[in-house]
Image (tube, rainbow, N blue to C red; front, side, top):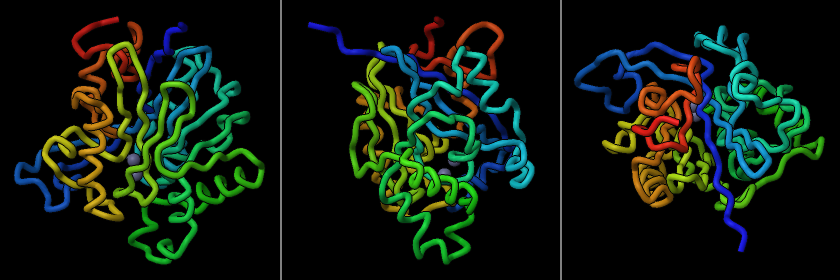
Length: 268
Ligand SMILES: [Zn+2]
Ligand SMILES: [Zn+2]
């Protein structure tokens, strides 16, 4: 019997935003300390393939949104030996500007998206400035162009992109948000993306202020726990603590790229 594949996972930090904790929680935060956000893409490597989760944004978008690019996404991937030109599959967790920019970075890739996210980003909800705030029309139209180029696979609910790499619709923060579960040597690791921006969101049942449906955000925390089996294997989408808790992918990449398929205390 052939062993089931396990994967390496890399968190690649590409941008940063300094802000107060109160900006990250509905209802604010009584201890309003600095609570910056980091911005990541993730790479799932194994079985002779590499799957990218989200595509980040570029320098121009960083300027527009007052976020600081620390290292461009392509540079981060190169640092761990990933050639963006040869990537075949990209999972897009949702269509917010910080998750689906860099439209030309993966020229050969097929994009995996929930039906519901495309419906949301192109439908009547976008008539409301409050709801379209985290979207960029150029990102959404770039994805529509990929649909017409035959480069998008739509998913509805739970779906598999490779053996041991599955997508799970959560919604809440964005209507068609999906998380990604990856089989690793330490058990299933769940890339929550914006289903939990920070550890504190799922740990304390708090909600990030950009939201489509608060009930689905809160239900989503239970889904993350169920998928990961152990909350220690949930990876929040924007928490600077991720790079502190997990070892650098190799010496010299500290504060930039971490390996998530090792136990946090165990160095590679
Ligand atoms: Zn988002
Ligand atoms: Zn985000």
